[in-house]
Length: 357
Image 1: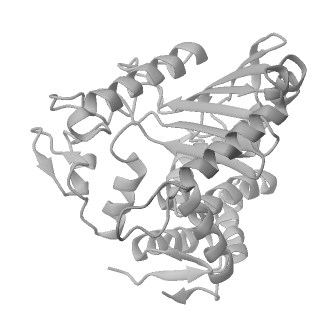
Image 2: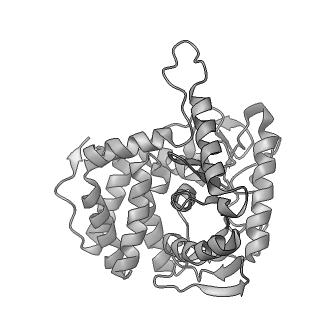
């Protein structure tokens, strides 16, 4: 396998942005997309980081993803905005959706927005965490327009729904409390990372096309494909049930599709985003105080032998963000080779600051 490398944050953003601008993406859009992708790498979510750049470039070339797309409003009320993203970059269109929803939430206390025909939105937590930073609470989910079926129901041997992630983030008196998870045992992107980097998958992630457990990530990309298991282990019906309902909300509310999609449907994200303004309910001070109290109470839990700290959602990502901001971002050799191959094809200079990790 190619050697792993490490790059300074600014260099990685500039390099990947240059790949997009060389692919005829406007510079402002390229920067927004790469800010988001690199932020995922900073937080240890490689599956939603710059590994996606070649995929996005291929989608641009095929016309599935459209640079410079606008946001078309389908329906709007004081609390609701339904829009068509025109197959634009998810990282761009999500920002636009949030900009339209924040004033609604501040004015009437609750806002709900949907997007259909949206490019891959990246890490959902980025968007809910931004909203929590505005002292609002947020919930977000997406599906894949009924096209990317990758999760098998308990007892099944073939995929029927997508990983249908869920993110919730709330403000607290001392920051935010975020949650971001897929309703499958693992995000599909993490299978991709294992495949590209030549790694095996842990037990409990995958089934092959015959419904047998496997550690080979290649089965997800075979024909016929293998399946990702729902989260929950022996109680996987919980993860699958949650994913099923989120798929229904994302496809049904947005105007997109749930599985099975029509034959000509494109693999896009359909988005549902809900924002609450605590000031319109029991009051912001009460919400901030209670959320901070709960965080402190959980952290004070007596620890089992060998456990140094009680972690809350977001703790690991925050620690990695601080570390990688200082030390640079590590990239596996497979991802780096793919990026360098695209750079050569597009005539983009490879950063000299990349060091062997």
